[in-house]
Image (cartoon, rainbow, N blue to C red; front, top):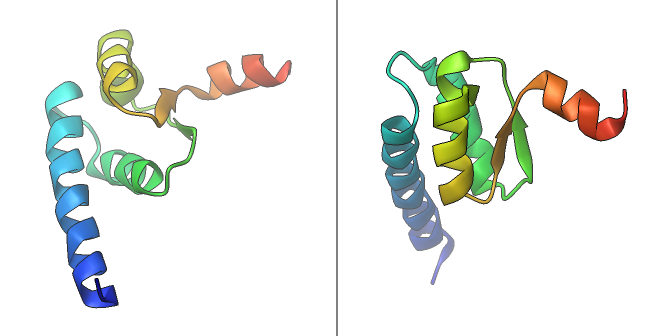
Length: 84
């Protein structure tokens, strides 16, 4: 598969993930945070830190964290993990 096909495949994958995250998050989620999370997910990082309650609130984060590898975390959760 050439670079163009790989690139198009990644865009389709990203679009599908975006639809999934939007469905799992609360309505009103900041599109910048949602887009940032999708970028983190596509980059296969362990976690995405945000304070957007529609994305990191108890319900949305539980649903997202159960479905995707990249976990949604609050700054407080990261500080606690680091022992700060």
